[in-house]
Image (tube, rainbow, N blue to C red; front, side, top):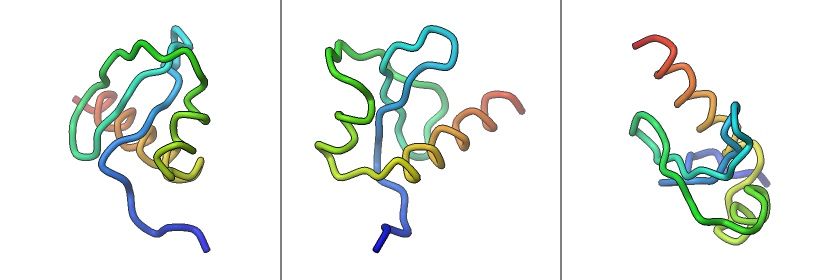
Length: 67
C-alpha cells in the first residue's frame, strides 16, 4: 500500500538543468547535491515513492511560481 504522507525530504531532477537536487517539505527552493546516482535511486534508498517525490516537486514548483 502506498504511503499517504509526504516525507521530510526527497530528491528530484531540476527542471532546467536535470541535476539531482534535494527538496524539503514546507520549504521553498531546493538544495544542490553531489549525487552520482539518479533521483529515483536516492529516493528508493530513503523509502520515498515516485508519487511522493512528484507531489513534493509540484508543491515546491507551485510555491515558487506564485511568489
